[in-house]
Length: 98
Image 1 (cartoon, rainbow, N blue to C red):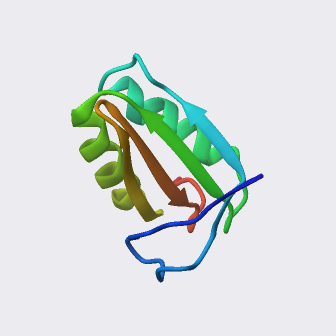
Image 2 (image 1 turned 135 degrees about the vertical axis):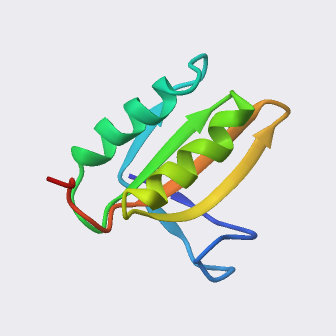
């Protein structure tokens, strides 16, 4: 588990620390594979845990968070960490839809 100190966060107060339970590095992959891999990874963690998703495909930095929210999960933060790298922090709030 690693800690991330968000400077500006969606749904998280500045100064709060996001505790990451699992990291999914999917750099080099494009949509829709980025969402499919993210969805499979979030299904493997427990409710309340946080998944950090690392992407380098700009459309994925928009589409993955939107899709996660549509699935009932909570996007805590989207952080651009490089010219072509984003870290998306998602808390699992719901089990898989049946």
